[in-house]
Image (cartoon, rainbow, N blue to C red; front, side):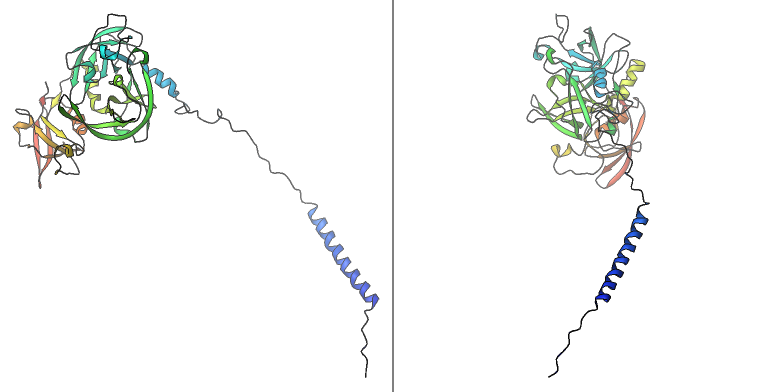
Length: 379
């Protein structure tokens, strides 16, 4: 039987292989070293700074970089706020410690340099009424209501004074839901005069039903806000963060919190301008009672329409009564201007004069037609 011989590794060969491997490793290491030692590892250069609440940032009170702060704007506007009472206080100021029930204390806002004050009719009384006005500096004046509108619950009162600071009127057609607003007024009495509350515009073109002394009335096209409005705030302004009046506060929902309403300022801007320039204004009228589509469901449930305003009643012997306009007609436009709210109609009519002619586009059932009306003068 033949035996197998185990192969022996040649020691010299093993040493040679090891030497070759070491030489290769040395060459590779030398190459890496000589290549990368020339590369400079640098730290990125950048500036660091701590965040600051005052540098390169707006404070919560600043409208923009070049404007006044909200506090500045509010302070300027409150200087235009007045107290209004139907009773003459024997004391030095109608803004006294007597309660509001005794004085009938309300709010107004100066809107012209020559002494016209905008407020609610239910605060000042109707046209030719007398009321008593106290300015921010404590001066008292007897005022005469030169213009009022019961449906709008607005009035203009004149006092014998000039060079007054007056508030800036904004554009209520451009307001947006969610916009920050501020209400200013004289709630309760003397202790809380010129109170400022803040909130947002909650909704636009709201319609509400009022029931007083067994009589139902409707107010439409109102601005809804959650800025706190109390009874003495009536007649005070609702202003934007820029200090512009967009509405006059009028009523609140007493059974809920944070639901108040203001009358959009645009409806009365032309009237204010006329009194400022001429101390007079002749209010034109079509001679109808009409309602928005939001109010109509209160009146008749079976009436629906997408555009226009609904003619609920025609004033006997008024301008419309002399034409072919009928109750239950839908007025789509006036002189080509589209109508969707009563304030759309009022704003346009108030720019006209009695005796001028306007053209209404109406719908009656399936019939479309035009009706021309000569405007009358509202007494």
